[in-house]
Amino acid sequence: MVIPRVEQPRYLTIVVCDEDTAPEADSLAGQLELPLWLLGCQNHIVLDDVAQVIVGINMRNAASVDALKLLLSKLPPKVLRRFIVDNGTATYVTRVQANALGATHHVTRHRAVAELRRDLSSTAELAAPIPPAKRALIAAAPGGRSALSAGKAIAGLFEGLVGDRVIDADIVDLASSEVLADVTAIGGERWLDTVRQHHESTFQHCLLVAGVAATYAAKNGLNHYAAHALVNAALLHDVGKAVVPKQILDKPGKLTDGELSVIKRHPRAGYDYLKSHAELPEAVLDAVLHHHEALDGSGYPDGLKGDQIPPLTRILTVCDVFAAIVEKRSYKSAQPTTSAIMTLVDMALRSRVDYEAVRRLASAFSIPLPQTLEELAASLAQPTRAQAS
Ligand SMILES: [Fe+2]
Ligand SMILES: [Fe+2]
Image 1 (tube, rainbow, N blue to C red):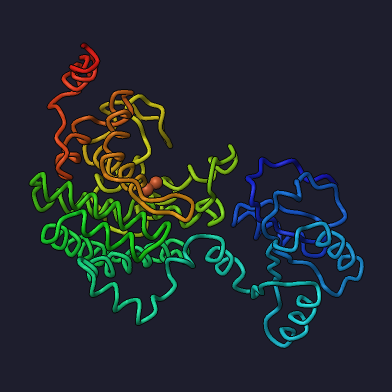
Image 2: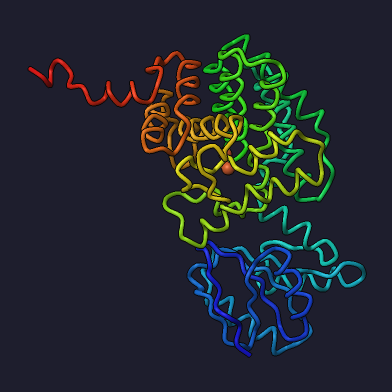
């Protein structure tokens, strides 16, 4: 039997099985969208790219154990080894056997899909409780209380998607109100600073987009309904990232085509979940689904163009790009707001994002821009006095 070649991202997770466990492992791999490695068969997976293995073999089968030992010996020591262990009376025996084979983690058989989904996504990071001392520190910072409640709402959303649970839209709406109130009171810059100091990666990104959206809404005088819709959409927009493995989300540097295709699933995953598990306005759902579209049709998931992208979605896209630039990651420092606006201006000139939304966002952060894209292009075409002389 030959397992078909799969397009694989680097930092891959594979499910290892034997003939005895193949049907169960195949179902697990299918639900988690992971490639399968069947011991004793020809597998087309580059072992150098494997970051973790999920082992689900019959540990009473000596031939399978030997084949597994051989496979594990070819993997670097840093590769995570998650072993599926039995529950009930066999728990102790299978755990001891797994440990003898180098298990770094155990996964309980009857909860394997839910446990692995959670461990493979960024949900574990988001759902981890904040220690009391750190909580107190955040609460004392400017805008800290609304950052905490918005963070709690985001963690609930990610957990809800992974656990396939209904979400309470009121919690998201309440968090939006608190963020809007704090941003209006202390200013967007200070609120963003608090988030950057205390939160990391996906968590930080979702909060920053909410803070940027609240700044846009507050400074541009959006009415109550529009402001809430925008901040709600910002809090919800990347919930689909719960299905993206954390190694891909946090990977520094360029992503492979395979990794990009996994990342590009997140808008639809978030939309599908929210549409079926919450009562949300159509404009908010559209913003979640289409926040990576571009006016020239080069975006995803649907390649929409121009007027096919509604105003709220265009504004969210601009806030999302801005937040990604001003956020601090393990592999990049936070860029100033002027850099974010310069990038957005460049994108508007290349017909990627809506210039009106860029201009309004820039003005919310006290950066004046010409009224129209034509005026902006003309001002850039004019030589400066120094260049002319
Ligand atoms: Fe996104
Ligand atoms: Fe985003």
